[in-house]
Image (tube, rainbow, N blue to C red; front, side):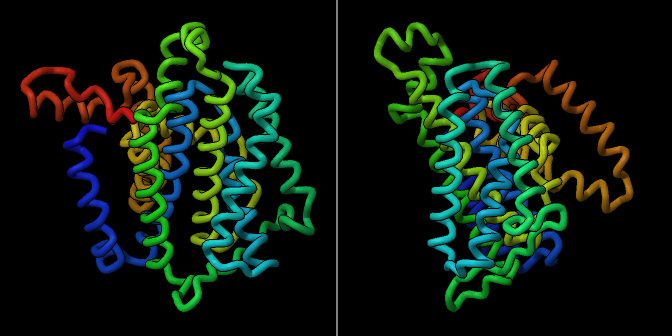
Amino acid sequence: MTRKMAMIGVPVLVLSAFLAPALLSRYWLFLVTSLLAYAIALIGLKVLFGDAGQLSLGQASFIGIGAYTAGIISEHLKLTLPYELLAVMLVSAAIACVIAVPALRVSGLRFALLTLAFAELFQWFLREAKGLTGGEQGLYVPPLLMGPIDGKSQTTLFLLALSLAVVATVLALHLPSTKVGRAMAAIRESRLAAESVGVSVWRTKLFAFVFAAVLSGVAGMLIAHSSGSLSPTSFDLFDSIYLLVAIILGGLRSVLGAWIGAAYLVIVPAVFTQFGLDSVYVVLSGAVLLVVIMVFPSGIAGVLTDAIGRRSTGQPGEGKELAA
C-alpha cells in the first residue's frame, strides 16, 4: 500500500470505530460488520491467489469451517472469545495443512480442481453430520462469550470485526517485506530461478494456503456470531466464485482491492435491494466485471492508485497498485 493511502486509511478506520455505532442503524451496522469479515477473507485470498498464484475454488468452505467451528464451540464448550478465536484459527490451519499435502503437489487447474473436490466434500459433511452441524436445518449460533462485555451487541461485533480487519490488513501490508513475501515475489517472477537460489516453492505455497485459510476461518467466526445461524448453502461453490470475482474486481494484487471487493459483496447489493433493483445489480455487476478485466487488469484499486499517483507526482503510473 502506498504511504499516502496508509496515512489516509488508518485515521478513517479509527474514526469509523467511533462514528459507525452512533450513526448507523442496527441493520447497516450488521452490513458493515459483514463487510469487515469479508475483507478479512479477501485479504487472505489476495495472498493466496494474487501473491502465490494459487487459484482456489474452496475458500468459502474455509469461511464455513470457521463459522461452524465457532457455532459448535459456542453451543457445546461455552468458550470465551480468546479461546474460541484460537480454536477457530487452529482448526482452519490444521484442515488446510491436511488438504495441502496432496493439493500443493500440483498447480494451476489441477490445484483448483482439488480445492473444488474439498468444497464438495465439505458440503456433504455439513449435510450428513446432522448431529454436529444441524444438516439442512442449519445451526444456531449463540452470542459470543466475552465476560462482562455484551456479546449480543452488534456494536461489540462491529468493533471486534474492525479490530481483526485492521490486524489482517497490517499483516498483509507487512508480508512483502518478510522472507516468505520475498519468496512469493521470486516465485511469481520465475519458479525455476527461485528454486535455484534455495527458495522452497512448496513451503511458500503452504504458508499462503494456511494464511488464507486462517483468515477465512476468522471471517467465518465473525459471520456466524453476527448472523446467529448457519446453513450449508452459505458456503458452497458459488460463494467461492463470488469471492474470486470480488478480489479480481477490487484488485487481485492489492490490499485495498480486498476492501473494495468486500464492499462489492456486501454493501452494493444491499443498496440495490433497498431500491428494488436486484435484477439490475446482477446485470450491472457482470458488465462492470467484464470492463474491469478487459480494460483495468489491476482492478478498481489499480485505477484509484494510478489516479492518486498522477495527481501527487504529475506522472502517470506512479501508484500502480496498493501492492502488498
